[in-house]
Image (cartoon, rainbow, N blue to C red; front, side, top):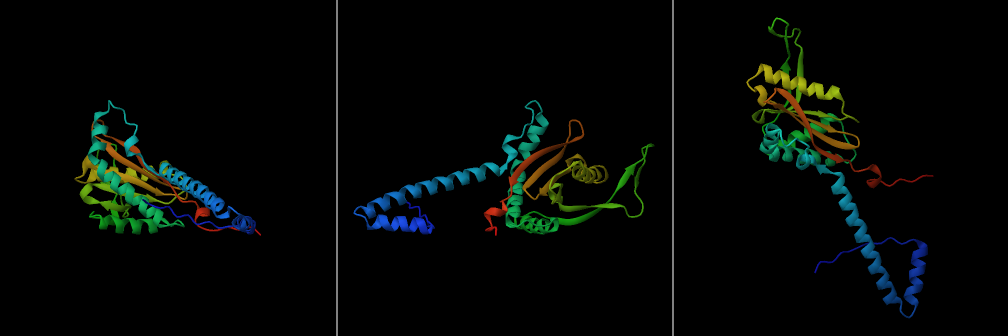
Length: 242
């Protein structure tokens, strides 16, 4: 039978009150009963906190609102479900690894190390020359060494990871990843197998989006696949006001 150990910190008033109880005739019995009830209350509070943490930190892959009639998207997500779950979970581990938050390159370095340990081939800061398709249909490389840099690249998976550390994602961040995906799609052998993830290690929460080409219409689809709230500062440090 497992035992649950609870530690209590008493105020001076509580210590005095319980001291008086101990000196009474049924002191030990009364104290034991009180401790047992307090222990149950403490255990209840811990269980509720755990449920709350599990609820606020979730992987959304099981609840993606994809229309049942959209067979391609449904099949695509099913095909990559395990891999996406792995990446989302390790992103959460990295996010929690910086208890007091961090900068984008901190998360990038940590995520790269974790992905390598998981067996992924990872390339960092991969530079890609950018192209432009003229009105006459000619596809030209932009001059003056104009290029973009992919934060992390999983070449075997044809997957671009674009990382951010910002309060809120906007169209600007999504457009950056879509631009990189389009470059890979149009100017490499990847074609519409090109995929991407936009991962924001935000101030208050982690947000993971998955982007891929719907081969039935050639358009990019984006789906939020995970979100986890960050541990609040007041749970990590003691604060006093004078």
